[in-house]
Amino acid sequence: SQARHFWQQDDPQSSWDRVKDFATVYVDAIKDSGRDYVTQFEASALGKQLKRPGWKTEIYRQKVAPLGEELREGARQKVQELQDKLTPLAEEMRDRARAHAKPALEDLRQGLLPVLENLKVSILAAIDEASKKLNAQ
Image (cartoon, rainbow, N blue to C red; front, side, top):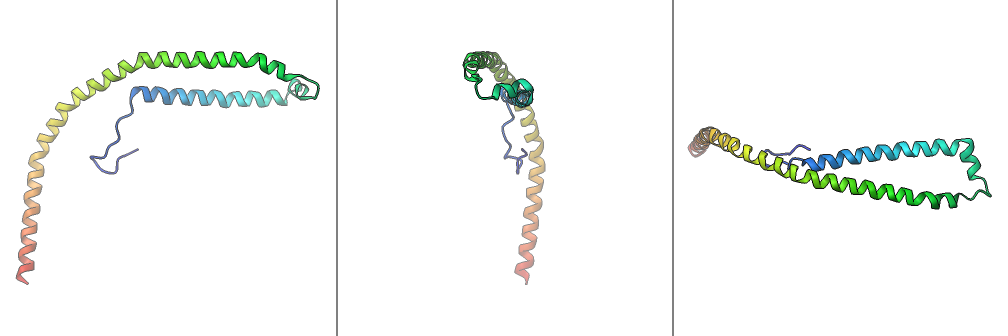
């Protein structure tokens, strides 16, 4: 999002936030495609047969549930490992950016000081002129 004012800028998104956003988009895409596959399977002949009364799908669901949990836990561990590896890199990049930005911002400030001083002088002159005109009336 863009800031409304020059000084009201949002903090830049960290590398880890970008990785999390990417992973979230990726996982959401997988979930969506998984839903499509489930819908297709349920519409298939085998899916319809499994829905019929008398089929004990709960047994299969109980057998598959630990596999899903194992997959979820493995993915969580891998994401945590990735976060642990990337966090120091992101902090190092942030520190480098700050180190390089400080001199550049100081140069910008020094360059703007004369411009701001000229603006101040011209505004004060305009205020004085307007005051004189108002007092003359």
